Length: 369
View 1 (spheres, rainbow, N blue to C red):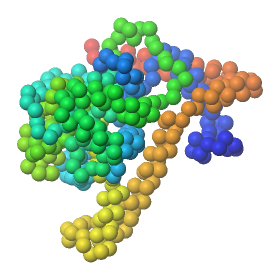
View 2: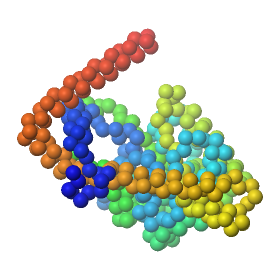
View 3: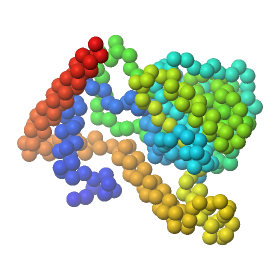
View 4: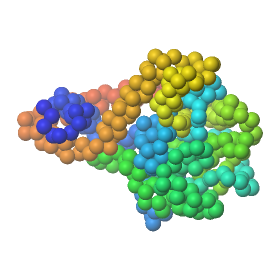
């Protein structure tokens, strides 16, 4: 029974509590570090005067919400699974691409330019774990016809004449940007640290951006001292084609076993795009080549509404503080004499998983000899 006043999708049944505690007990019975491999990098030394910045995930719903909380309107993030120029064109207008990859895994990289580019906003990254927000800001500051809101519009005006490193420092010293970024920190009961990790190299992942500017494609990587110029692009299809080629070429520079990549696009709010087109069709002002019907667009608008609702629920689950709930659940389970049984089941499951993993590792090692 939901007597807590929480939204229904945050409320868990007793069976769900037991299942979660089994998984939690299994997790905490080892030194396994949480699944942070798909979050931002920890490459830089943080300037403590700029505060701590949390790790965030490459999730389209999360990044869309982050952009909205920065005050930007009419923009969203879409995850991409198709790199063809035609697939990118389906998302027009597309303001920039965010690429997530394993840092340091490439065989070679193209060097940054050694000259300034008129009108191109580029900020170096000087803050640990800020690369996702940094990539987003680098794209938004170069996006035409985007409502940045007062905060980012003022920020762009203030930093317009600053060099890239000072732009990065300005981002680090912005309380608004840092607070929005850290608002997506996950609530964690424990920080699990394996003593062996001190002598083990950890995979670091990094976000960078690709944007078109004045007829050329630029790579904006905050860990570089300047943008990387990837050559001319004649039109929209041209920049989609060149961006697709550059990203594919970059992926090919990694070891063939590396598959941990993610690509997102910052685009105009799809509901606004579909709504405008629907209005044009009903008014008789739509382009004759439009392939959509009224029913198609109504279905797409409904799908966008459902997606945004799902994003909102996922965000609430991601950031809600369940710690008091779990602690009280543990007390109640212990009082009923059920907690030890849950821990025993979890320990047995964990031992089985470890044994299976070791067996698979031995099999793989034997097969490679």
